[in-house]
Image 1 (cartoon, one colour):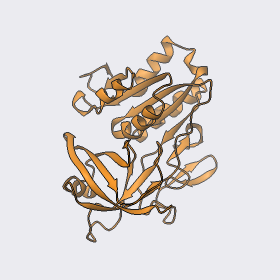
Image 2: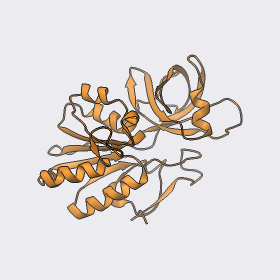
Image 3: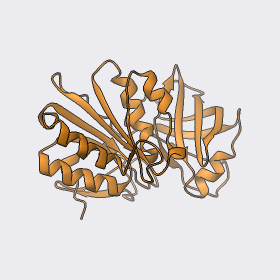
Image 4: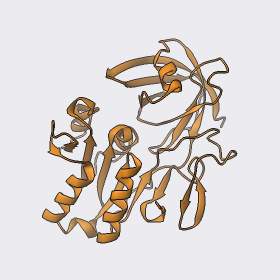
Length: 258
């Protein structure tokens, strides 16, 4: 099935400062996106910016695809100005997906900042399973889709850097406290995470200490999204891997952070 397509903007609205929810309706049938997949989107029809930008899958509504994004540069600022009915060129769904937990595994989801986008997609997929969700942001004002998380029957453990909501600290700080209180979680749970690189480094150290297993969805700059340009490679125990092709989801223990 063709992965190069055009999509109409159904909605593109700001939900909190600097964060937008984009709903796209593909103009042709595309493969069903899975949690962990991403799209490469042309934010404008001109030549500046020339390259498409990668965006994680956030939610599906029938044939419509929702993308949650944060203003981070020229491309996303241009995208935030696109209107209902505008047409975007797109490629996808691309990349791999989060592997499902084993039959005996319980699930720990960890999200930092805009990393909640693909983690919510996974939570929605696993909504009938027992889930612990740790979600961290800089401030209360930057927390996203908490009501939607609760609508799935999940009571998230919230943390903020400034302590304005939930526990003070990061999502990893909250996870450490939880593991201290509930050490049995180490052997019975599978981790899934998405967030900024410092969060992954902290999670990697914690996983090594407690022999935790899991998967992370990496946020990485990409130029092509199809494995040709090698602009998104990351070092792993198995050598350099392309985030767009072999990822963006990798086993936590495979990534070399130094």
